[in-house]
Length: 221
Ligand SMILES: CSCCC(=O)C(=O)COP(=O)(O)O
Ligand SMILES: [Zn+2]
Image 1: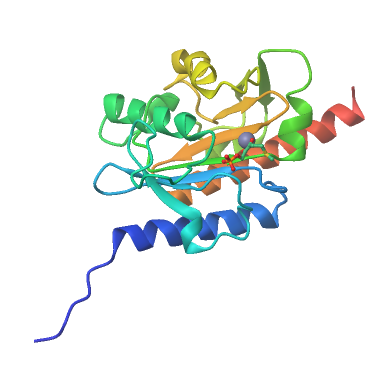
Image 2: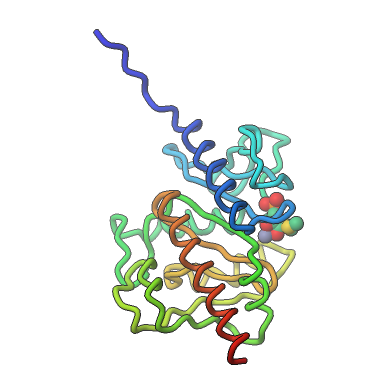
C-alpha cells in the first residue's frame, strides 16, 4: 500500500506566515521590526510572529504558538506585542461567524490576521477624523459584501495606544462591521480573512486604495 503523508498543520501555518512576511516586505509594509502576522491552527490555537523580529526575514523559530487569550504556549516565548488585537478578531469570529459567509461585511470566519505599517496608512491616519472614506474605486470589490465601485467603504481610524488591552476595548464595538479592516492612527492597518490568501488579497486591496487616496489628496488637498 502507498504511504500517504498527512500535512503538518503547524509547519503549514509557519510557512504561510513566513511567505506573508516576505510579500509584505516586498511592498515596504513591514519596515524595521514593524508588523505582525498570525494564522489559526486546527486545534484553535494561533500561530503568530515572535515580538521584535523583521517580518520580511522570518525563520521558522520566528513563529510561536499562543492560546486564544494571547498566552504563549511555551513558557518564555514572547509573542507580538499586539497579540491581543489578533486574538480578539479570532474570538469574535468564533462567536459570530455564520458558516464562513460574510454578506454586507458582517462577521466572517477568520483564519489569518495581518498588520502592516505602510507609508499611506501612517500618513493618512494622521489627518483628523475617525475614519478614512474610500469612494468610487473598482478595487473596493475586493472586500466582503462589495459588488460595485459605486459605493463608500468606511475604514475606522482608532487613536494609537501603547496599552494594547485598552486599544482592543476601543476596537471591540466595531468588530463585525469593518469590511476593509481598520487603521491605528500614525501606526498601521489591521486586515483579516478566512485564509491567509484572502487576508493578503484584502491587505493589497486596502493598501492600494490608501495609496490612491494619498495621491488624490496631494493633487486636490
Ligand atoms: C518598530 S514597530 C513598533 C511595534 C509595532 O507596532 C509592531 O507592529 C511590531 O511589534 P511586534 O511586537 O509584533 O514585533
Ligand atoms: Zn504595529
